[in-house]
Image (cartoon, rainbow, N blue to C red; front, side):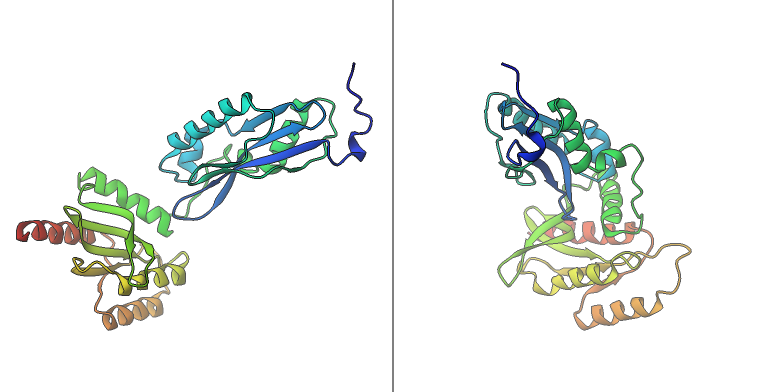
Length: 273
């Protein structure tokens, strides 16, 4: 018997829609990666996600994009054998939202799926153009320095974006930490003068609350940029605050100055141990 679509526009219960959401580490940005649509009349379920995961990873600086893609593929395989939308957590950063009512107006579910995808997944259009990331943002600077650490083959000693225990009982992210074995030795927070200055400065002040007694040096790294002027007051402020807290302030454009300090201190700690 053919399905009667005549009542679709007046029936608000004729569809269910879930959104596949990814929370990006370090920035907290949430991206809609896909949609899952169920026809409540036929019980048919269809999914659609972004296709170019390689470009997605590069554009949004997602370090484990292969794992994200694998989790989505496993979800799609599992969903095929189910007659309800599999909502919930796929990984710590990837979730399928609880289904919400959706009005299906097209007679073809594939057409409706495309409409829902276009409406909910705006980044699909963004991926058609290379995303411009501010080179002076904290995220971009850390990524650049991380590449330099790997090039030097120091990545076993200096770790980026490490969560370190605080005196108040929580773990907070520190931009760079050098280790002697498993013991943290130097903790460095990066401050961007040009993008989200106050936010990055407040994060730098977390150095006051580090719990590990093995940490011998607390460093604020605030690299300048050629051609950028008008930041004298901010520079003076950070310098004064660093002096009050007995932090080391490094404001050299050359990243090697902070990296060599961190490596040297960690190597010295290994010799003493």
